[in-house]
Image (cartoon, rainbow, N blue to C red):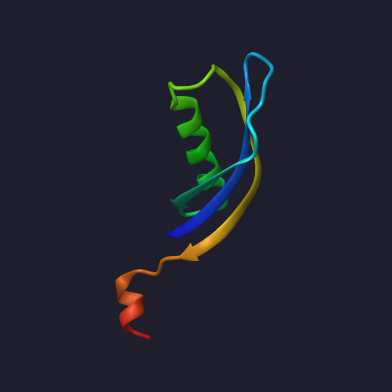
Length: 73
């Protein structure tokens, strides 16, 4: 698995948008990381209704290797 930093902005239904946000997620691919962030934002109940989540960038923070691979090094 890989830890990704996802940079995104949320557009609300009332026409406003959030400042750029950063979220760290663990996923297998950059696309999967983006989808996790979108899903989490749409599940939030403490904000205005969301129109869209616009992903700006997905960057690798750290790659986690399985324990078996680490012992072989």
